[in-house]
Length: 84
Image (cartoon, rainbow, N blue to C red):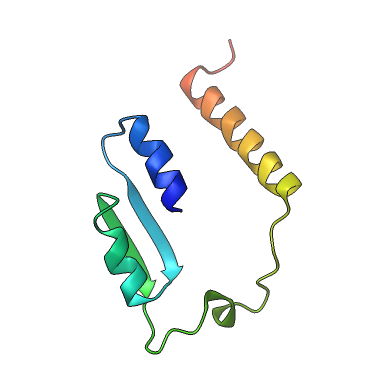
């Protein structure tokens, strides 16, 4: 997420907001210096790991990530310049 925030910062967006469903309070605090806003829905103490908060926390494959990014890109392009 830090790498993504740094890459986005180079694009000079108006704001960078990170939102996560669960994280350690320390991680959320550290991110406050790297992004404009961070929303951490739950910051349990003690925090042991994200995976304990999900029924299924299986890893996302590289192929799934590429497919999701390609779909998001298409949707963004369609929103910016709808087909004529």
